[in-house]
Image (cartoon, rainbow, N blue to C red; front, side, top):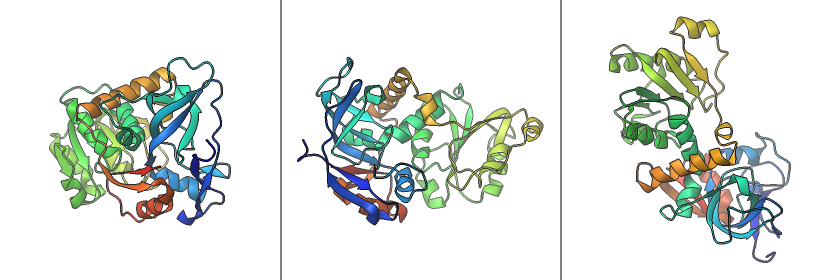
Length: 323
């Protein structure tokens, strides 16, 4: 195995040039673990944070969390996975590799209707969209939701997911060009300081049941001002910076509002929750409700070039790395 397996590691924090290739022996999976030979690896912006050291992790480190392939060995005590199973994993680090040992309870089965490439491109953003749409609030047909960054990674999955539920979606994007790509009931762009007034106009003054906000600081005030009485603001990201301090009195005065700051981990913390979330995602992928939209692929050995393209805003849709 040592002659066949290799990975892309970072020995010292820095730019894309810090990513190096090395051969390694993954060894045999231990108790409760499986060894996956990976077909595809998902590229995510968080990978650049680990590379630069913005997010701490012990060095040297193998980048990446999202990958899919086939099991080639199982450790002791693993009963629900077998050699040859098509699987994916989107937990922990170590995905930028031809082979990867992971805990069996962090592995999900990939159905025949979904390719390993699509799974690698979709697991993180798709499972995030799943818990946002299905688990945080009981949305009914006709309810109205506001989705920020609707053309982005999570937003582009969340919008069609919500519409399939019969939810009326008001989407907001950072530019008119991006808004034109979003198939929502109302696809808006433009300054955020005018968004709440637009939302009120579109909802007859009522506001939305939920605002999904992955932007953070810049969109926070608009999200709060767009909510209906007893509405929910889901702040699941901070692309523009951390949100300001929350005043509980402001929540009260603006209609007994709710605010949540969730993370995917807490919605897939158990093996059962993880499997259920993945099944719901793969079901919607198989039915064509959501799609991976892979815009480009790079050889895994060219991971540095992939990082340059990602940071240079030269990518569209999802990006995968092929070992």
